View 1: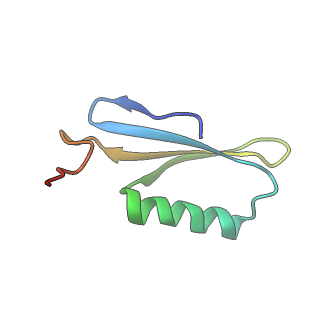
View 2: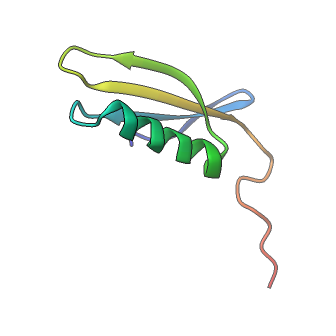
Length: 70
């Protein structure tokens, strides 16, 4: 993972998937990010050699962490 960034009302998370990651594995990995992290697919680029760069995005919220009560 290269690092998160934010722009306006969206925050982005770029992911780099090496060429040895199958499409099925990549799909499952992205589905987990969507289900548990609230991310959606923004963009995918396929580079020579099979490396995929994926950008996930989600709406920014005022509370980045859930409210924790003790």
